[in-house]
Image (cartoon, rainbow, N blue to C red; front, side, top):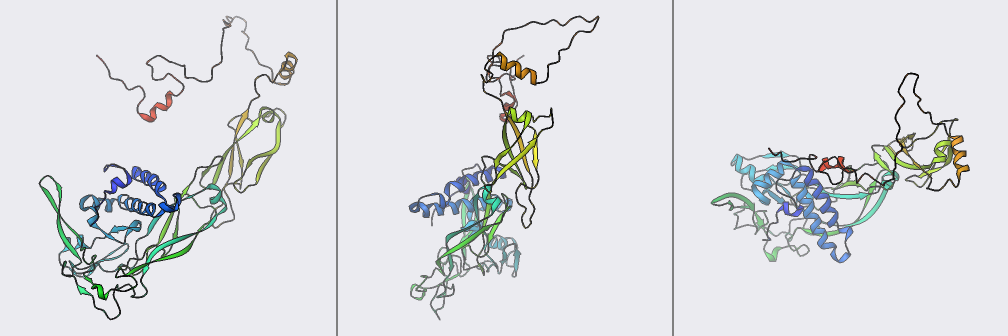
Length: 433
């Protein structure tokens, strides 16, 4: 039996990791091991790693299944479940809790139970296989249809998933006496052991098996065969990150399930260089010149996600100007709304580009600009008031505030002092008496 690998090690996290840390680690590991991102000769290995990562996330992201794993390890989970590899199966645990009760326990993914100590009953449907799918903002705007090759396990058509030849009879497993499971003791600490129930390795948890001479020639008793198929994934325009696209019945078919599970793609939106999205609205920054800010303009300001140029015709009334950080709202130019002809809005943030140094060549040009721009109003002292004391000082221009408070122990020094809060309380010091 292959050595069981710790699911926390699969995601490279501590056992005390929070849900947010588990999700972040899953995103990182899934992207690194995705089969589509490696050469063909490494794809099989990457596929196994990807399934292991998906399985670890499915178990550890759910509080109930995580508790079961922490207490029982992978013995609490049975082949053919979540993440395309294994999933929680509560038959043995329920049998231990309720003794020899017959009947069943209806769960989210089908029925569990049956007679205590017996093989697991068939589920109505297998658990879903979760996969992340990266998609660009352009693809979410326009929609996307893509085809890909999939290889999955399907029931052997030659033996209808029994694993034996026609008219052959399966033998009751002598190892587990037909129960499909065996009980073992597992150490959990110094001087401490726990009892756990695992699938019988002889009959793979079925309680019965076929002799070699009676096994199906096509599937060699495995009950399933590999099937290649071209699948089509359609992402509707206006889809969002976190939405799930379901390909029904396209996951591996475990012979103990009446139907194959679904492949579920979790959409992950790639960052965009120009646009930022919030719901159905888009935001972008546009750059205009100082002359355009003062006088208006008529030109293309941004290239939209579908390739169209978005033009603005701004004719400013006399004396009105566009200011830095001012917002221009363009109704109906945001993201499409799914199953609708409507769209969100586009918000354009103004960035004014000032002229380069030296653009005024001489004093005459400087005077022309002064004559056009509003005059500076100086406050003069009223009769009886003491005139303001003015001291003309030397100065220099600097690129940033890095020298502000430099060399001191004041945590407010430097241009980035406000960002210190991200790493903890600013200026925390030991008080000395």
